[in-house]
Every structure is written in structure tokens, then in C-alpha cells.
Image 1: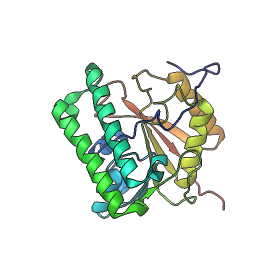
Image 2: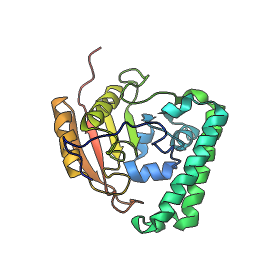
Image 3: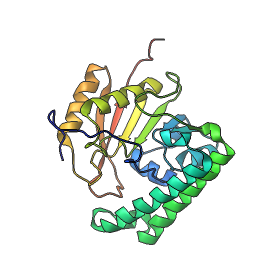
Length: 240
């Protein structure tokens, strides 16, 4: 679907959003992360069950994840993560023609990567709980300019049927408060439908917030329709 001013958006609840498990390798493909990026301060929002933070910090980097699900206790979070992992894998298998399985080592390889990512994240949560902050857009419990880069995976645009254009803008403006650069992926909804009108509307509104935007290609997309990401930047530090 393409969002329009007359689209009716049902409220987005936490149960609607999958707590997804993705590896740092997947993040590198989605967000084109290089050594300079990985050497800076990174926020993953929403972090879900991704192992990116765990892997970055294991290699000496500085990263945290923010997600409302981190407010759950350890047992309940593990239960939610593993249940959503099964849901995510089943969804991918049911729509197998929408994905390039070779990018993730085939069906078996993909499932192995996702399950390994989930276990890495859950183990790191136990070992270093301070890296996993309970919070939700558009009001992050993080200081302004406390990071160099915020990564936002599979929330904005993915749930366009539940989030208005204003919701998207408010979320990106908030992430841009925390860091001077924000990368958002993908720019299609959960069924792989392109959202050109919504993307243009969001970019136009971000310009009024003095944020510059550009769309970049994604070289190795797993989801065949998800070939681009949005990069949003501000060139000056925020005033205190």
C-alpha cells in the first residue's frame, strides 16, 4: 500500500512488531557499515534480538540497543524472542519467492544465522545489561549527541499501515537528536510493497526540520524488494 493523508492507521502495539534477530553481517549489508562506522558510537533502535551490539562490543566497539521489549524480565524476553524468531522464519518460508536465499546461505543457513544472533544477543544481555536500554520512539531515554550513528531496522516504513507520516518524521527527528546521522532500512512495507509517496512526504517534512536526506542503494538485499535505505543527516550540533 502507499500511505496517503486519508489512510486510516490502526494503533501500533508492541505485539504487532516482531522482535527480530539479525546478525552484524546482516546489518553491514543493510546499512553499509564500514570500519569508520563501527569505530564510532552506535545506537540500534529498535534493537530487538539483533546481535549487532553484542558483536560490535566484542570487537572493541561502542554500541547500545534501545527497545521497549527490554523492559520485560529476562525469562519473558527470551520467551518473546524465541517465539517471534519462529514467526519470522515461518513468514520468510511462506513467502520464499520474495527473498534471495543465496545471500543468507540458503534456507538452512538463514535460520542458523537468525538463531545464532538471538542467542548471542540474549547472552550479551545477561552479561552486559547496560547495553540494552528500555525505551521507544519517539522519546528515547538518551542524551542529545550521545552517539555518532543511529540504525533503525524494520520499524519505520515496514509498519506503514500502523504509523502515520507524522509518526515517521517524529521518530527520525528524535533519532537525529541523539546522533548526527540516522540510517533507516527498508523503505518497503512488511509485504515488500514500495512506498514512494510516503518516502517523499517524510523527506519533505524532514527538510523543514533542517535535516538532509538521501536514498542509497543496498547491494545485497535479502528481501528482493528492499533495495534502498534512507540516510538522514544534520551538519551542526544541536543547541543545548
